[in-house]
Image (tube, rainbow, N blue to C red; front, side, top):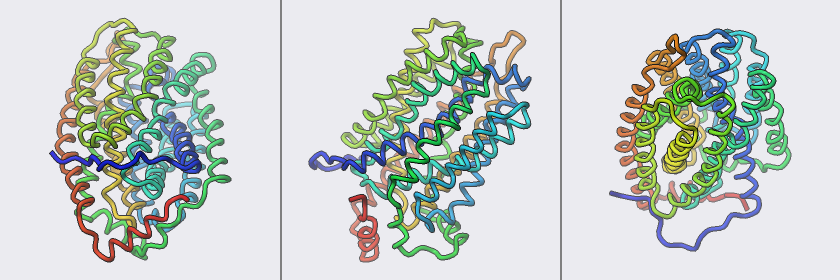
Length: 432
């Protein structure tokens, strides 16, 4: 089995400005991820408050994902034509406006439209952020960078979800969205004032016509496997997570007051797992760590989706182990896939990659809403069926990531042509 394990080199250090970029992108990702994740614990409140079914709630989650897919595809042709900092600010402003609309929603249709607006802007932010990371950091340290940025996932649990649930329990389900919209202004202002332009990719010749550039990126045979792999990678989170709180409350016997404890403690451990997974991926090989994380996640999914009434302590242990596997998968797969595109296609590749992820996620959430149902007793039925689907997709992804890893190894070992050396030189203009 090939591995992307690097040769022995002195441990690289990050400059002060690089640390700032990692921190501010993580802060920004915190607000975006929290906006998505808060829908899961709020589901137990939203469905009875707005009188919506599990199927309609799946549509709300899918609305964000499908609109994010559309905007990502449309943005792909232009993603390499502008300073990435400006793109990031533009889409982030739109995301905050969409989140504010969610806070104002009064019924199912208003909330659905608000989630669609949020997705149109929020779905592109992740791809622009990843393009910035790939522009500024070498593959040898990218696992660590991805791991730190993925800490936003943990922060959204440790800080965001408990606070959001506390506000929702005391001031209504609208309040967490107001929290995100208000706090989200902070990273936006900091990026606008302090981040340097990220525009060295503009020095590399690309297709002049945005539509041609997008088409060439989508049809590039070297990229298709990555897009397909990302499609399946999205299945797990979008299938299980939107209904996680409803399952915990109605099937496992966890109360709404205990949900912040569950998410908070799981998130504290995830703070450690994110950087650790990235470090191990850089040290031991990203694919090897991805396999270990996938096996652990599959085992915990098999246990979790078949639980009945369970003490809070055991639910916390299972969630902690499951998130450990998820973080290992997220940081290593992101680092590997980020190594696939050429510098001139990076923005477009990341936009398309994020778009197919959102499309797959939207389809998965919609399918999940059709597979499960809520009985008269309030219990969620057929959740274990979702677990089987998720584990099956993870098995296929392990095989696909093997070939992604081989592609990266081949790319790193390949002797560069004169044109590729010129591209590498242009790519080497990283932060000083």
